[in-house]
Length: 131
Length: 88
Ligand code: FES
Image 1 (spheres, helix red, strand yellow):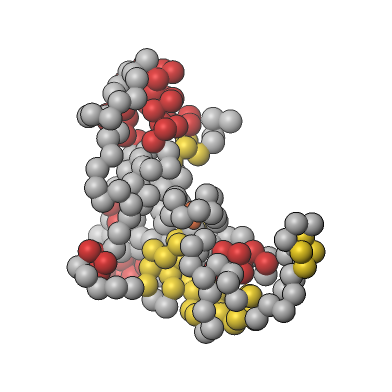
Image 2 (cartoon, chains in turn green, orange):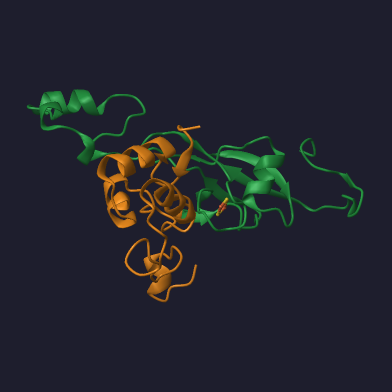
């Protein structure tokens, strides 16, 4: 857990006597230190990707890290749009990454299913949310 | 360089913005409506200066604060539950 941390800082001194805090990210349990933000705790655990772009699925992570850009938004205890860079971790906090969303208005009429059987078939594609 | 993303919320690249600005020689507002740059989750607070800068280069439009990419409340993303008085 301390792999990605500066444990001996020339100005701030040694990082010691930290209280470990457990939380989950997408169902996996990780340990951070008390006072960590979600973003810093995940970074220390080697996780940089916090969500994917809702429409394109491109990976997203912290961008400004000062609460300005909302690029780091995650779902915390089922509340979405929470900034990972501004929210400190709590014991047993449940954090979930942002997922790909359905884009029903992007499709062309020619692509619409003509029968229910066709609709069922197209909605079973793995990982592609479809309406 | 052109694949550089300017608006991260709506994933609009520098190329998209430059092409649109060149093709339509449009105002900042029109550019925004055509490409969706600055219309995403963060409310355009992150990419507005960049969009303004590209536009100034292409069409010479000086960034103002009147009609073009103006700032209006709420000045940052707020959930309806917070607006409705429910703390989170
Ligand atoms: S990284 Fe910009 S708001 Fe968190």
